[in-house]
Length: 619
Image (cartoon, rainbow, N blue to C red; front, side, top):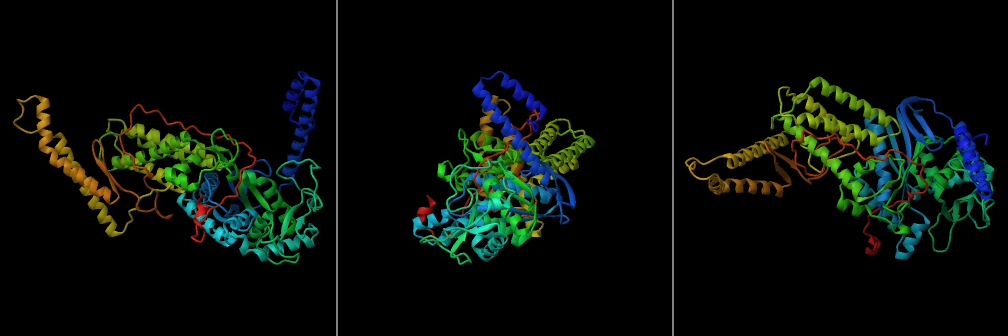
């Protein structure tokens, strides 16, 4: 027990004293394993080579060292990042979506907030046992399957507002590079051809295996045609009816693990900064990537940092979402019920390393927060335009609060991309500003300071990947004239409507109040009906007009999506910009900010659209 923390050792000893002999033996086994695994990971940490280069001040949890390491970039301000993409044999589900949205958030944080030049490469597996089985069952060419689902995948990722990869690599486009990669490994003595015609990696010869998790020295089972049971396939010999490519070892196709190593090495060379995927890929996929890549390049460290995201699961189901378990929700179903903004908010409320339980309650929380941003921005816009009275703004105090919020958000995002805490800081600022605007005293009216808060909230939301399903009004002269016409028309309509509601008819003072109100309502009814008709006509052209106590507002709806270059505007659900309750309590977000090491959660995702597939594939 020499390697165990003293406090843990004392705990083991105290428990052992209270146990029966058989249970003590089990505890001894547990204690020995704990000591072994602790020593193992200490060895892995000591072997990790800290890069030399630009220190970013960002600390990320490195799955290899099991600690937060500072992100250091050897190539100036450029970060090279490889992510394992989908295996394109079926429609993607929300488990896949959560994985790629979370990494999109991290990518945006690095690029948009910390101004790092991120080169983001995604590998697509377009030849695989599952793909072949699907093609055979449908009587299709495997390329028809992969083309269909790859297109569907990227279409759904676009709908979720994830940025496209800098580079996308498909296995079938890199067959020559993969064959060369395997051939080099074989010539260096780390690979061998077995009696079944396949080529395997010799784990024992490599010698530095099991970096991500400990394994007993002798695993149960027989190795079969392999030299050792942990050896894995680099090249699979062809079977009857399968697609194949020629190689020095005979016709066949690549093994799964070799694909990512060969494709990433072809683009990035013998070293990459960051490698990521779902927690299920940690072992054996990423373990095997390290072994074969270090063997090929003759290096001790191929990827400097490894990120692994927790998986998404349904309530009362601890298993990750998987088609084989029939516990999936397709992305297409998600997007019919929720917006991209709402799902992104849902993902941000849980740390990327933690598992996420997908529930209606948590999605409702995400919708509430997304809508709160919209209401806040509309309220601030109305205040700046002078459309309501109130708002006792202490300029110095609010600007300091804004600066403090920015500093806190930056601090939390530098700490392993802690989005739950960063989001909490943002909503603390929103709640504080809402409380100020709810004050009836307007002796310290300051539209400029409120505008500064508005700009900060909009820009932060845009940087994190939130977008509006509305049309962005550009500075084009025609658009500016249209905006002015709409502003004037909506203001005129509000004046007419307010006149019809507030105006009393003269000469009716002798009548009871109820009777006067009834006559006035009937008299002014055509004006109110005209106001309602105008609002309906605007709605037919995707312009939403909303009436508030002291003003009316308008916005475009469902006219397309914003470009990457445009400023983020109101969130995509229509909300009324009502003045907040002066007794409003600061909003506290129910967040999950305790990342747990996660075991399996498949990133073997998929998705794509090509009309060559029969309609049965949509089932």
